[in-house]
Length: 306
Image (cartoon, rainbow, N blue to C red; front, side, top):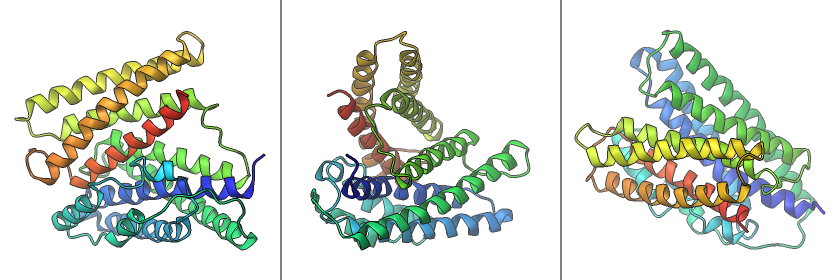
């Protein structure tokens, strides 16, 4: 039975992960424009601040409500998040509200039996705010991508990265809309679709890392390149499993092993960016961002593998 408690818990857990991802997407867009496109810079900053506010409101409701498993997964924050925010703020001059991260670090997990009607209604209002905000951000990303592909705009972000973050926003939007319609999100039933989606995301992360490393970082370049190729294969396996060409269990096991490896690679890379031992043009928060996404995917894979 799909209860109000399930609705609230799934909604808040979804926002704790994805609202932070969206605010960081906005930040990456914001710092990538040229001075000519100051209006786009300002608009990206507006989106970043709006998602800051949304995430802050979600955090205020989450203590004692969301599951301990999600909070301990490393998808909400990692041991590097706060330092990555501070260093990225120092490098860019963009004001990043680290108080949200500090508040998330103190959240306690629980599994409440009942919740008041007013609490459920408040979460529903947050979902509606998120739907509108994500929809607007998707349109903004689509405009940027169109401008870049038509040579109407230059940005430091790869066209593939803009498309990449647009796909993530669309996934977030579809999941919030399902929750608002009280459709239970059965991640296990949707496992293959999720694996195909996230394997592609992991492949692209590796390719972005490869392309943003200094040319002298040959060992890291080669390792990132190998991960990109491996996850391209895994994406194909997940798609083949949908047609029953490849066994589901094999796809999950292979994806789990590879994701653990790339998670460790990203953790080491993020630490290297923070202590200035890696030469690159990777903003530290991007390293932590990709690490959290790997942690999120690992939680899903462990659930699928049960």
